[in-house]
Length: 172
Image (tube, rainbow, N blue to C red):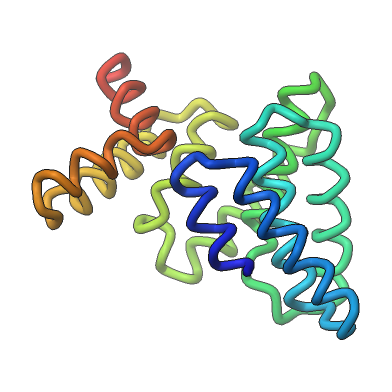
C-alpha cells in the first residue's frame, strides 16, 4: 500500500497517495511495525507538504523523525529533515541550518545523492543553491533520455520533473 501511495505521489495524485498511505499506516500500527510506520508517516508528511498542508506535514514529519532518532538504522532521516525544514520555511518558522548540513553529509556518505532528483530539487528550494537544481535537472534529463518518447513526455509532465525543468530554464 505504501508503494502504491508512493507511485501516486510521484504522479502528483496526492489525494490517492494519501489514501493509500493512511491505509498502510493503519496496518503498521495494528501490527506494531515502528520502522515501516516511520517510513509511511514520513511519506504522508511529504504528501501533505506537496498539498500545501504544512501544519499536518510538520506533525507527520516530526513524528517520523522522533522514531528515526531512536533507531540508528534509518537512512531516511536526512530526507525527513529536508521536508520538515521546507515546511518550517513555508510557515516562516526558524530552523537550524547546521542540521541541514549534517543531513547533507550523511546523505553524501550514501553516495546516491546525485540520483534522487526529488531531494536535490528540494535542497535547492531550501538552500537556494543552483548546484542542487543542476543535479536534479541532469538526473531528470538522464531518466527521460532512457525512456520511449511518449513515456518521457509523460514523465516530464509529472509535477516535480516539470517544476525542475521549468526552474532550470529560468536559472541557467
